[in-house]
Length: 327
Image (cartoon, rainbow, N blue to C red; front, side, top):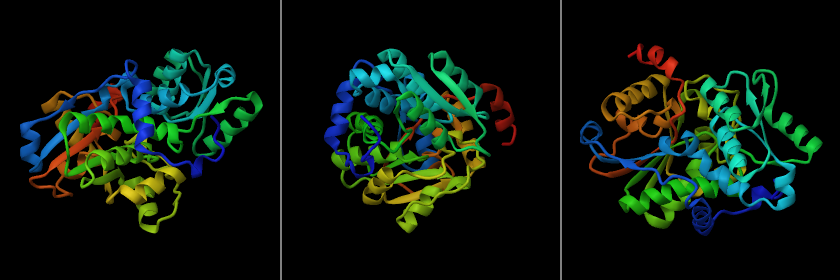
């Protein structure tokens, strides 16, 4: 597996089914949580797919393991490299450990400590960079060429997208058809894979992507129908601090996604607080992107069956007090 010709490689539901087979017995089949109180607040029936309970704490494990498990013996021996602010980094590190593949991760110096420690804890080599002055893609590409490693990008790769799509596959298998599905969006790997699963199980389901208001490159790309790149956004949703979507992910989104929405940091904090206080769910800010528009009354889905993916739970617990003190 290389990164050449990726942009023209389509992803089908059969790829997601094959990914699910590879992940069977390795990834957790995460629970779906409900709350009558949440339903009353939002005016609809909500099903939360809790990827905060996934291995390494986020959905990213699905795509990373699916990608690494398809390398041939020579590629596994050479090792893999990627770039990530945290969850994809941990996912590649853990997958590499399980598959005995050396992993090198390019991470920003300001990455959350919990994610940095997790990545190192899984045995990966971590190289830090300054995201205000350096480009992670260039650093990773240079090291890849020097060491002959395989580059595993965070989202714009068919094996990554197919792996991420298994989360929505499980959701539909567990709860049946849905009227709407809301998915956090950074680079688009999760929402593109989820959209393919949704189209298979529930073709009438409307799919919404949600990203930070400060980093609405996806919304801009969706409206212009071409990739829009922005500076690294300042937001508490560190898992969605991407500069742009990918070519592959945008193509799938334009085909299957109804609308791209945004949420402010304050809205994310209020949503997080409810999930912690009333549902006892430990989630990171990025994970609440999907729920935020409905919870904060910015999207009316009254009377509908709504699926929402909580993407991860790798949160800096020491920082929560400061976040919640603003409410």
